[in-house]
Length: 254
Ligand code: G
Ligand code: G
Ligand code: G
Ligand code: NA
Ligand code: MN
Image 1 (cartoon, protein in one colour):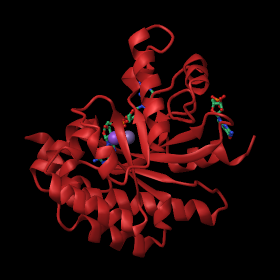
Image 2 (cartoon, helix red, strand yellow):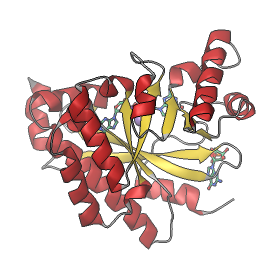
Image 3 (cartoon, rainbow, N blue to C red):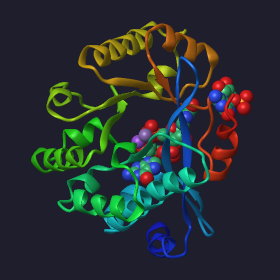
């Protein structure tokens, strides 16, 4: 099947790249970090969505190599930006369940940290709730090992998974990312507003940062800010873009 046969060669042919999306502080719209988003422009298939090719990479046993490439590229990028005087405080990297459940993940990641020379406290791993409710023992061990290395953890798409809030107490979580489905109808849907307020309150009670995803309008940004959400990400602040474009856009401080 075309996707699989193409993907096996794609990494070697350099067809994958990372885009980066700004994460900003809502109070001052300063850059607080970026999320790395994997992209595949296949000459044969066109642009393929990560939601399609990540599961395929897992099925064919390519996820380790692909995930290591992502980590290596993302961490190197932060160091390269440092060198040209563009300081991005933090890089967020997405992880799938299969990556985290692999016994060697923390070691593999430590290796990337050593090779790139990045300060591990500038790395945040994003996992969804379903990842945390997966095969628990191995996952918890891996997360604890990563925490001990200094790497941070964010819960992506918060509120959409099968959520048992117990894991927020047991795991070294630093940040909740409010799913963009709740953000989309702020100002129009009272339920979404209530859920958003509740997540912001939960974060405050537990001492976790809360970042709203998918902010597309000023009205959404204002609503979130007024409700006490301190961080955001979305098209209103910038689309995912290449490293050079991101640096050009954000390096002239306003
Ligand atoms: O950026 P986009 O909307 O296409 O991302 C779709 C999904 O793919 C998101 O859920 C995102 O978390 C995931 N994703 C993007 N990049 C990576 C990556 O490098 N690794 C993993 N495991 N998932 C990614
Ligand atoms: O699941 P995760 O949150 O990692 O997915 C990130 C995806 O969300 C990326 O594919 C990115 O392109 C997309 N995205 C980023 N900002 C916005 C936005 O403001 N609106 C919408 N609809 N999608 C966004
Ligand atoms: O460039 P444009 O006007 O589309 O920017 C949209 C938003 O992105 C602005 O509201 C601004 O907050 C943010 N932004 C873009 N570039 C910068 C920058 O260099 N510095 C800061 N602080 N914000 C920026
Ligand atoms: Na994600
Ligand atoms: Mn994410």
